[in-house]
Length: 249
Image (cartoon, rainbow, N blue to C red; front, top):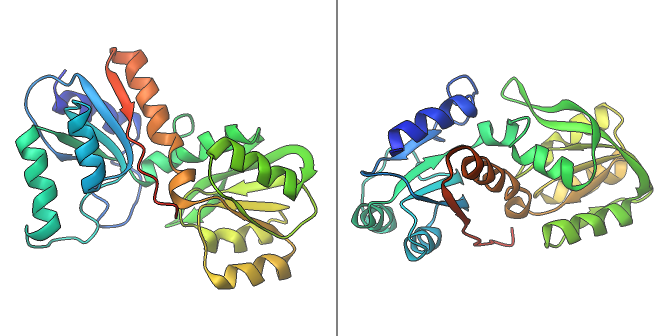
């Protein structure tokens, strides 16, 4: 299987063409290569460090959540040139999926996080760009402190818990989606989980009586790339390896 065949499969699997995203996200195949795909490096972010890891691990393709082209059209120079040059020299291809990976009902970042905390009775939640990109549901009643500790253990990351009390109904959107806290309050959810937020979200959570948990942008978005990797291993007998380069954000 070459990268064009695999990218067509991933386009269909993740419904790339029909899901709206940021204009510069460029979901799908971003950098082509030649030859058969044998090993895929899985990463949250495309950066020089993960490119170097992929080359070191003898990957000939990367599957990432945050791809290369966020700044739009720009000169190919500096660090931008360095990344592309390294990939071309190593014949390393690149496929990226942003919101389509967040949203996938089985392999998505939000589904992975929901499974980590035992969220059931799942429903779409968290409108962004006219679509609901997250999930909401119910967990076994527990204190906000206990749920925060569970998240820290499962994600191996620091979790900021804002608010207190018993939690049973939870909404979540991975990454940098703290503004959706307002929607969680509007639906009378006990708790809202995302990756990162701003100073004012502290006050919104306290005054809105909705516990806010900030579990890290990076940490909350590792689940999707790992799930896609497991799927490709089972479906096509491909090798995959998670290239862990945490930002702490």
